[in-house]
Image (cartoon, rainbow over all chains, first blue to last red; front, side, top):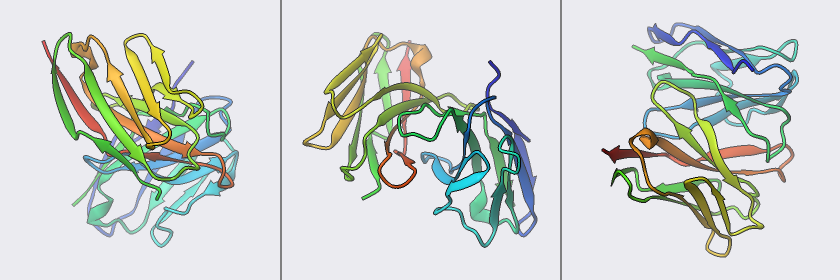
Length: 115
Length: 114
């Protein structure tokens, strides 16, 4: 079974530029998550999708971050404009359903450096 | 109230020793407590998880101990091996808030000396 795919793996941009990350979840997984992992910290949920609907985006900085999952499969996360504090690893995860007990499968992440 | 506090920040253990990582939470609505293991350059992967209706769960060399009254849980790695060297995250989630959110601890970097 193929895992969660993410691209690019690394990205370096200047502050105030824009950047987009792509995620393809495990086939058949209805729930997709984007997490931000700052160095030395645990992952923090940015947004959760159930199929193509948003379940939770309470911690997404909506003035600069946006995410979509148009066909209920793959997803993109965009930052515009980027700030220095956005430097982090952006992890995508998926699970079969959104229930509390469902295992989340993580992709390898995209390491973003904002200069 | 949504925090999960994890300690220690880092841990060095001799090969064959026991590694112990502790976590504490405040929100009694949490009903699922997974532990994730993360190697450098990889995403976290589920290691073992427990629900609050049991006090202990064991899978191979990994054991979760859960103390509901103290709102604490811990991961014990028996016979620690160099291959266990990784960052470990405890987490807590609740299905009672109209959807659910998984809150992660800050992580513990474990190094097992050969």
